[in-house]
Amino acid sequence: KDAIGTKWEEGVPVEVYREVLHASWLTICPASEASPETHRIYEAIQMNSVPVVVMDKHYRSYPCSTDPLGPLKDAPFVWLDTWEELPAFLEKFHSDRRIGTKLQEQLRVWWKDFLPR
Image (cartoon, rainbow, N blue to C red; front, side):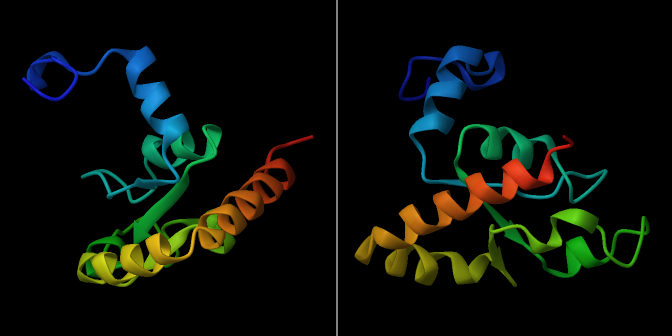
């Protein structure tokens, strides 16, 4: 069982998942087997949690296009080249919370403009 008393194979209750996302400054958004653009990105955005996306060779190898994330490429996400960069980013992030506040504000503005009117 995990920290909230749920067996991993049972999944996390939706309400708990939403609460965790809403309380999180950042959300890790790895690519799925089908696409680099996953539901995790949109769930994070809707909860104002900044997606952390790695644009490594796995992302770049998707045959869907030369730009697998299309309109998301200019989003104010945390873009890394490899997962190995994550610890250094987190160290910087934790040393200055203004980074998180700024990213969340940029995300709110970007998302509002991104959505169809």
